[in-house]
Length: 371
Ligand code: GLY
Image (tube, rainbow, N blue to C red; front, side, top):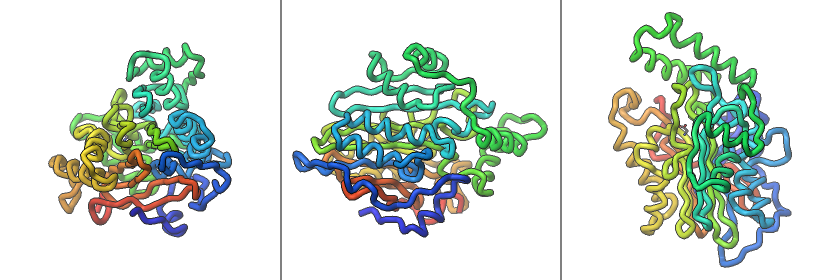
């Protein structure tokens, strides 16, 4: 059973500069969470699902839970929830104000899956649109396809009336990008191999220096919900790895990696180092393990063990010989049983009829990624 995070721990570990901190207290007592068929409605998300409000009254999980339990389609409710985070300039890992790529351009990825309707949609390398989850949803609703990318994804969205902006940077995200440029290589990248090491090293040093929230280096929000009828949906949206090579796509928009939903079984989604997850298609793996009878927690832990086993390159290991990165999975089965699991100690957000709260994930490994 996941442990609640005390207010003190919550404030200590949620460090995004300038972010208005939410407090993990119930605030949805009035939501009509009607139970039918024995399923207790629930929305789970990464930590930023209950730390960010974009100046409004509700977080992502509160927004999604309220809409879902009032009868809105589960996926539409979840997309409305993650829109809160995408639109908030204080969350530098998602949507508007997300940390840009190596050329200073914000490129966004997202996907969504609708369990009951067995439909999915996604976008990758999308520029200029603050809410990539809405475009992913439009790909699902309006096309026969599952993934549109780059300029053509943008053209698709523009054709549907989405506003396209020239630049999704905020003053803060651009300032951090300039700081990264200043740090990596004043001699203009003479050695491509050293440049790669320097780029990752400079980024991680900025995390250690407290300039970037560790959760925002790989960014992302994943949000999954089950309503009282047992209908399961999910959505994942991100600005991806900070300072990535332009065109890099991580796990978030890839079905089976950043998200997987099977209405008969449940949903799993991820945040953290996308490459580690992509290699094992862990969200698909977790749902398949649940299909075989594993609990959300056991299935998630097995996926993490597999990632650890596949992490053999020295550059990806810390001084203890363990993975030098964070990776989290948010897992819910069709009965509403849920878990947040992670490579190292972390947090996730849960909203039920009792309100929203931040919980501790179950970590696979002790200490921190950089220890
Ligand atoms: N998990 C987000 C990314 O790696 O892009």
